[in-house]
Image (cartoon, helix red, strand yellow):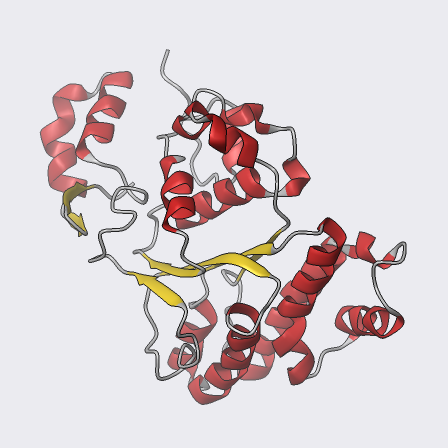
Length: 290
């Protein structure tokens, strides 16, 4: 019996638990981990599974899911005992800019601050016990109430510091759709304000952050290094022309053919090829838009 196709589901766990259609992309975890890049920017077109892969990565690595790796049983990452031991062993900060859409800088800034506040609220267990010093408690509460630009710029680095101290381990940071607020800024005319605002945050989070183990950013575009990435000389940029992660986003022809067989539509494969084939990532010329 063919699996149900869950339209629009971006939760890896929900797809697996509810036995929805899913093409195994857990090999992305292995490839990324073994590349050992400190900060990775991956750009892909819309609707190629970037958010789902980031959610999968969080679900695999986060200490919140320690000893809950059975959800990966039967998937390629679980065939390697080394990665079974890696599952659930890192504090993970996962932030998305997908909803940062606004026609003014002040509104966009407010939405970014709200996203960071929500993140801090998620980890408010840090306020209990003796993990935080008194001045750090004041900073934490300041985040939850009102943020200056300087507070925003160092907010993710400070959160990484607190989590690293709590778990006695460096932190993994995942930022999905990093470029959404920048695209909005370009369209509505507040580009310079937004790039300066984002640049400070990115420098603090991804370059001058001693509590960072590794980080991934995803988006649909690569913003020039002369703007927000000018200080990030540790950045590995993976565009559609890069060989890394060639088949981690989108479906290969083999995967599409297998899916068509599952749904009794193998005889429609040429029509599907005409509709959805045409993307080349790195050396792969058979990538289909999901």
